[in-house]
Length: 114
Image (cartoon, rainbow, N blue to C red):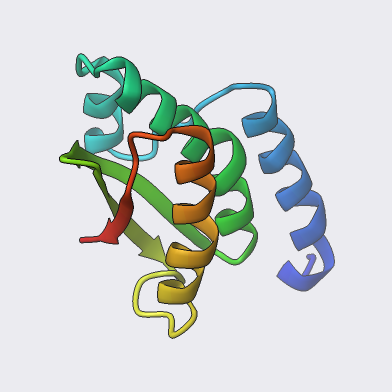
């Protein structure tokens, strides 16, 4: 009978390793639909960066981030879990997610939470 605090770092390590190896995880029906949708090359790059560089970090804090749309230079994402409503999420979105996506994908101009 273990407490979450005793095993949290082990679980997070496995989750990070899973995503770092390029694997994905389908949690709900919508996630599965995302994987079969035909995305543009830019959208595929956005999703790849979200999955490999951003989602593991967000997951460490008990949250999740999901790609919703890319249009006119704006990436729309859905914040879930502890990120939803978190006072720091706006700063994380602008300083972290937006800066990273703009760095790797020049077509991205802004990231918005929906």
